[in-house]
Length: 135
Image 1: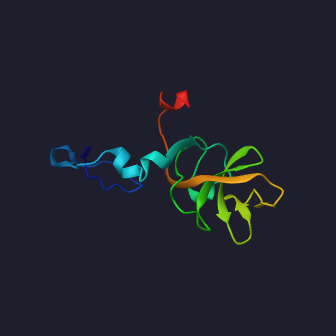
Image 2: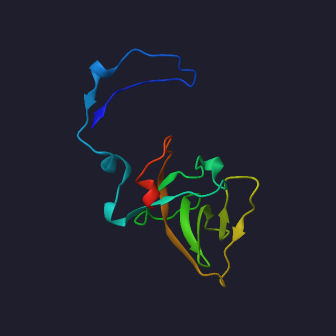
Image 3: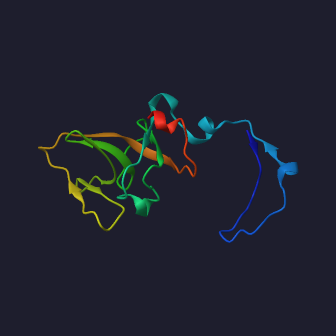
């Protein structure tokens, strides 16, 4: 993968062409983004409940089933047949949103609840991807 180092501020108005000074890295995006390939899956975020964590509607979520779940992790879980992306509070048995417009969800012993994995990365696509349309 060729990497062109560009340091750009939010008020970017132009920059010199760095194309002549690229570095060749011996890794792929898979190597960079996925730590446990056989235990990793990709999902798409839906809704705005995780905006405070930087996860927007339509973002690509890289979810790792191998990572040990800790309080404060952003997870994908199945609660009563519904897949959700939330912050887990293990001590209070709660699923928390990262948007003040959504309240916490208590997980009781009566609920069917499984953690599907920890969200280790999220990717925002600024142009539509034909591959994501297949998901």
